[in-house]
Image (cartoon, rainbow, N blue to C red; front, side, top):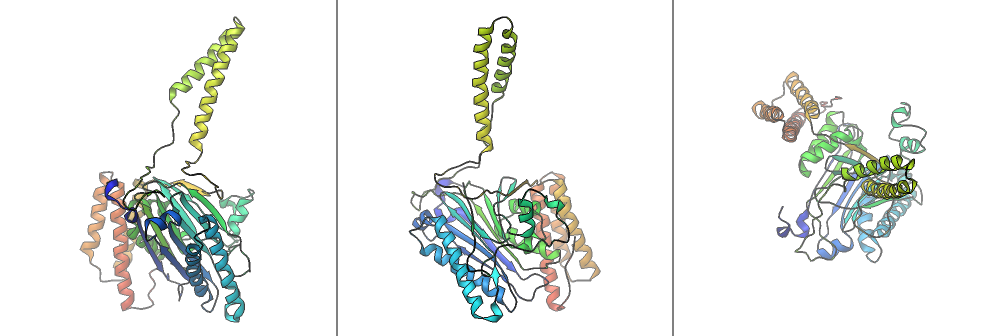
Length: 431
């Protein structure tokens, strides 16, 4: 994208979708997407994306999540004299108070609650504020990072350092959360960031209706290969294919270019996602040679060994500093750094193994549709698979992922059409 042809508003691509799932009668998820209307608002408050997953009977969860997504953005932008981190914390605390008071005023709503995960994109970077287990991810290159911490029983147990995720007993439910908006008059809000932005970064917010059914690796590869609109659709479809036991809400955001805080609406400052500084091999060679020289001179010329040893120490210090600079996260701002995120990180590889995994999903969809004798546009469906196979043979795995993803979404649209003709038919697949 030509830097000069991009204005501040078009440097961002985003999409959102909320689905009731296959097992719930109502959708207790809610979301808000508010992009800055002008350059001044971008510089002071940025773009805001929020997701809330409600809890409670008698539509209480639905009310709690709606109150959260209505209150938080309104209060955040109203507190324009406060720093963004302070404003977003106060906004979530205000939402908690309002939800709690509403719950106390009506027996049907007593104890209602909701998660709240907010992503604010600012000139300083990405700021995350969250309560509960609705997640916020960042994909940079092929590295998927979970920026938020799950306020769940399982994650709190793991945070003690005494148990790993695979060691958590199966009888402990993964959906028990330890923190939410509404049940108590006060709430502890976690802040993470700011994480410096780079052109090409992709962010994703989701309720546990997605993260409980689709792995981080699958989310990362699909987010990296597809446009935001296509990605949210395919991810929702995958969650429903695996039973859709809960409401599913997904927000995706891709950063094309980044305006700086002081620039006008017509100019942009693009920050490339470049590699960390490397340690040239010459430094290691020099260090090794100096150590050998020091050892060799020690017995015959002690003073020479001292000089050589000091030189070796100097080189070692340079190597250590460079190594530390590679391990530290890049910073493009001054000011406080909140939280300890990212809390999870993995490399998501778009390779033949992942393509084969999607191919199996497509094959099982084909078999299910044939067994149920559904009316499907088979030539069109099969064309996606043919193009995916051709791309995979050329080792164009990204294109193969896209074609198989299109096949999945196409078939799910066909299945939804069949369900309208035969209400109550189960399309869940546990694969």
